[in-house]
Length: 184
View 1 (cartoon, helix red, strand yellow):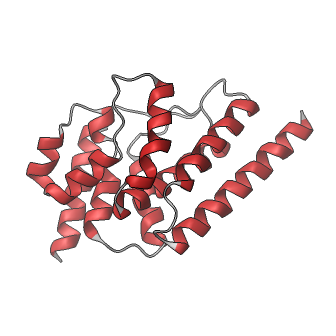
View 2 (cartoon, one colour; view 1 turned 30 degrees about the vertical axis):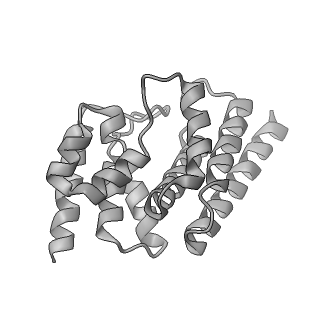
């Protein structure tokens, strides 16, 4: 029961922090749907660790809101804060540098961070096909999938179920993009 309370506390915290944010897709989807989906993917793939689920709900709070690592540690403990920080990009760097660093750091991430990264990429890949950011060409979408696959390569070896799910979503998305290319 304590784990459930902690998860709900993390969800409430993330919802408050992301309350005025929306995803980049054509539809104005509330941003909080993304971390909820990431946590749901982990759960559907058999991940039951409450700290990992909490980190999934909180994974973009430091990167995209005014939340600090210290604030996460104070409210959710050092394990959750550490997982989140392993998955947090430094927004002071260029987008290209951040993307490159994700590929470089993936192999050395903790097992929990790798699982979270895989779940996050599954969610993002689905969104690229279902509700892509405005103005993204098929080529840009394909390049994004290639980058996700490169990050994933460094995260392998942590969960057969998550990894198989990633590969299925990636293949389905590539197929859909290929179909869109041939129809254009």
